[in-house]
Amino acid sequence: MILLTRLPCPEPLASNADKWTKEFIAKRQIDKKERPQKKRYAHNQIIDQLAAMSSQKCFYCECKLIFDTNTQGYGGEETVDHYIEVCVNPSKAYEWCNLYLCCRGCQNKIRENSLSVSECLDPCGTSDPSDHLIFDDEIIRSRNNSTKGIATIKKYKLNRENLAYKRLKQLNEFGKLLYEIYNRQIKEQRQTMIKEELEALHSFAQPDHAYSLMFRWRLKNFKDI
Image (spheres, one colour):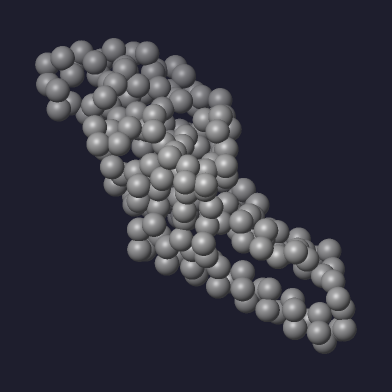
């Protein structure tokens, strides 16, 4: 998780949110199980704007969402998540600031009645997740026993097995590149890395790279990088 900046509200939502919200609340008064229409809150323009905010990554775990040029979508890997659940506050069903883009794994989060988002880190909030989260290789930990860090990891299951495996694969790619660079240094009898090598390594920690926070911590372990 990294800190994200909210972009302007997409036109379909800006023009219709008030009307859609009133309709939905009226239906909820009749049937408490009524859900907001996904084709409205997950409109393509809304998904595109959310994806632009996160560089096509899940807001919570930073896994990369693959855009399919054939379908002009993300292949069903993504879902628009209500940060504050509809059952908690129906009035936020079509609120732009309550819509987040996430992967299917992170949508399977611990529900609000068991662990509130108020106890967790908000990727669109004011607190930088790097102040609360740290990595031991592919395993995410709370930094300095941060309660928000602990709660965030628990709520979104950020150490689930398949996610940790994906992070490990990315670490292996980083390790291969580092090995190649060190071998090149030895061959060329250099003590330091050249600009292009440093840029290649630091690209893993850029906001548009999968699991960039993990690589920020990884890079801190190397004095010469």
